[in-house]
Image (tube, rainbow, N blue to C red; front, side, top):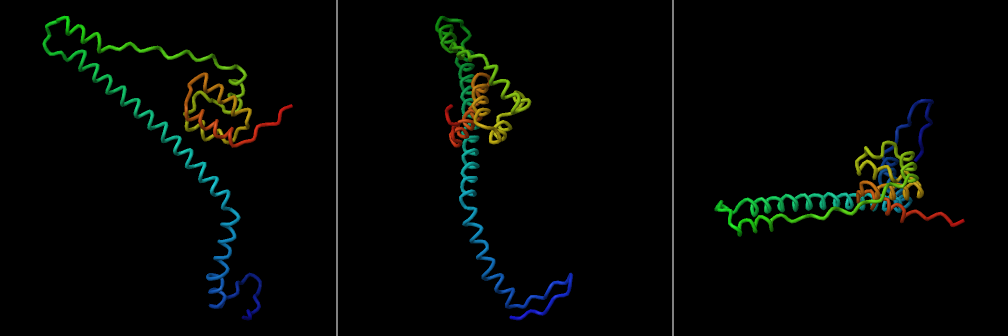
Amino acid sequence: MSEEPVRDGEQAPRSPLRRTLDLCVFAPVGVAVTVVEDLPELVARGRRLVELELSNARVVGRFVVNKSRREVSGRLDGMLGNGNGNGSGSAEAAMADSEAVVPTAEPPARPAPDPAAEAIVGGALADYDTLSASQVVRRLESLGPDELRAVRRYEASTRNRRTILNRADQLLGERPSPPPY
């Protein structure tokens, strides 16, 4: 397997034996070494991506179910409340109409946003209040633990978007907390 000397700027022609060795021996060895070295990082990255997609799918699923439930409930209320069909105005019809309307309790009031958390969030994520949940979630990974806790407090006291709260909790769980002073 001797090779002829190569002049400057020229590539040496490779023999068929050299090309076969490169393809059948050295390339698979290089791939195996790369996979062994990078496998833990690839697994962790894949796990994070799948968890994020599952979390997003759960949020979308809950949204669709809740929206459909409200739509069906509204249609049933309309049918029961307005669909008595006899137009007699009887006591039974009035009673059916009154039962069809179910008063809803007002949601509990949320605490006012923590001004310190609001300042930290504003500094870490510009225009936070205009960002969608998916935009915020993508940016959470670049934040430190203190900023994540501030985002969590602020989000819980304002829009309470579960996607953001869950992802902040996941990231806080992955990162070690700072030692107490």
